[in-house]
Image (tube, rainbow, N blue to C red; front, top):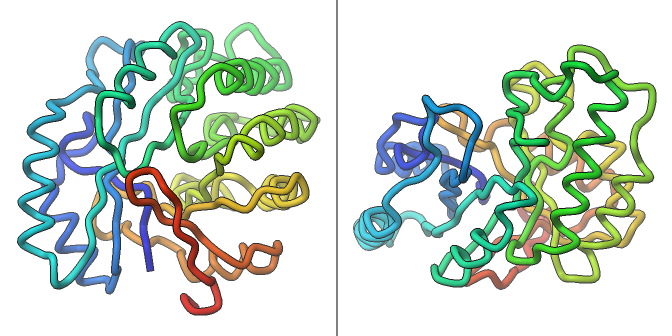
Length: 265
């Protein structure tokens, strides 16, 4: 089993030492994990700085790779929080570093944090969703320095009520942009932990991605604690298989490898 979205003390919203996450993953029987630490430039909350020392990150991960080499594979990833005016800065970051895996997420829309619900102020729910998907599409039209889109329907987590539309047209445009470019999406299982009835994306979006020809999909818990590693992975693999996916992906130096879901269940 592989967990391809997790955090440690290098992420500003996590205080758990990296080694504790590694030990927790081993105890859960995971064979490979990828740390995807947060970098969100210009995050609209001055009390949180989503940046960290990349050399310290690299050094400690290398030490832990050596220490636990016979028990687990550790990959060096990043989760970037895109905004339209920061794309060139993120391009420079990804080009300069040797990440195994890059998640492209949108945590901020119109320079407003989704977490605090600011995007919904002065808008209908549908208008807020439309703004989110339109800005995400505008970003990925120009920005290609990533491997998968993170929790593509994240806005659902912060919406107090559902929109009247599923926004499949907007999502189709996004998928038609990333699939020919060899990019994928993740199934982020943390949605259920945060009160949703499903992971992110929801089942209908997974089906839409498959219908659009999508094949690259990773599985991640978005864990910030060892106990949340591999959260609902068996159920998620069964769901992916039911939707029509035969493989999940892992990455090495940003090149995908594919693993039969049948062999993981």
